[in-house]
Picture (cartoon, rainbow, N blue to C red):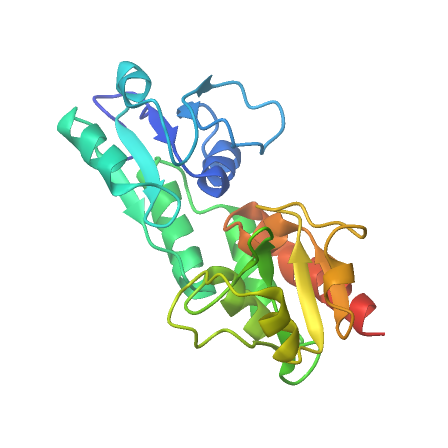
Length: 246
């Protein structure tokens, strides 16, 4: 969608990482984004609610040519309502790095922009990544009260695997299972990877629950966002993991 009747497309994004990707690659096409779309800083577009509870009438009132969504981030009923209102929805599915890179290329192209340099840099960075170890066992909490961890078939799990980290719950039937803390510790992880989103784990909130494991506090954006941050993610994640394992 390089142009719509001779003009730039009007795009609404319901996915924070896609918002950032489009904002830096196709300036001016975004007319709406969620309240959670925090990057790039100072983004001046209409805010249309959350990823799980977008204001559908507000989105439609922006007269978008394209709405960007993700099968994990957004709810099917909201997307159905947008389609029923006449909006075209580009739905992405991202559970691996390769899927993420392909989805980003497609989204940027759909917004009428050329392939961005940051995307090539991300591909190069991950192709050259050096694992921090060989199958270091880990659990990756994303929430507490109750404890939830990264399970099977996830983008975050794929990034960690490329860095030499073996998620002990990668074969769990659920993608984000709730697992009691005593069971997590009984699994015997060498490492616990603690991102700062969606739950904000900190040095004082998280590591103390895993006394037998090294704790790596990581930038959640580097671990879970697919966008320009992917160019820096392997370096920054590897640094955090190595620091924890010293």
